Length: 306
Image 1 (tube, rainbow, N blue to C red):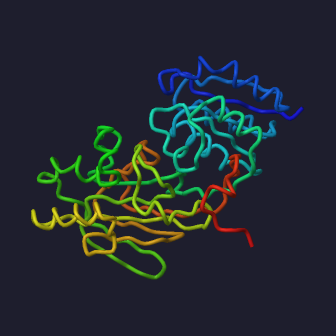
Image 2 (cartoon, rainbow, N blue to C red):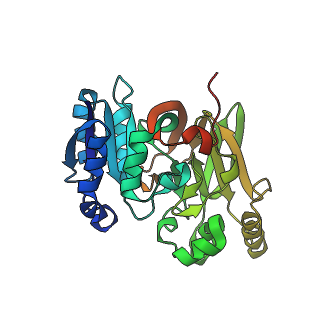
């Protein structure tokens, strides 16, 4: 039998996995795996466990929210061999699952792992750390995960801006210099994101129809700080129409981008703190992680291998 390390967060999503654990393990066993289960005990526990033992298994599967998945990916990026990774979402938001069409039904997600195919997925390197789907800074990063769901449903990605309007008068923005592909831009920005996702904080994200998960490129979107109420309204209108090519935005694709500031800039990586560096280099590690996803080649927008 093939060997699987199954690491799960028992507290994720109000502990839903406790009601599904027997059925999940049964699916894996019937699928030909000898399963070793491990419930995490703290924030870094999944990272430590996978770093120490992943190479002893044919497959690592994790269950939890985006934070648990992020920890697993960080661990796998430290290894010399590419160990396949399965994911059963059980968090409250599950952006990666939404982007990759992974079932929110936990038992079905387990079955899809058994029947799935390898899918090589791009990972972001943020200075000396890693992220799965987004690195972001600015006024919206501390409101995105608190935005009311009804606002997300009505406005989609524009809910970022709408929810943060009440703070705009006291937010001075961040002076940044951005370098990519021989181009240098600078300005004052209230928000910036380097992403590889079609969903952020449970809402549809910028450029969702142009995201390829294995093309070696990130979607980079920065929102310039509006100087007047009229400019603020125009920024909102542009976001509602998904017109990110106006002067209110800086938007491009890149495999590597550098950010420089004279002041510390707080970043979030996959919704968790990424520190407050003054200089950041983000590099796309193309096809760095081997996910197992059912129907990936048919359902996901991908760049075909050469």
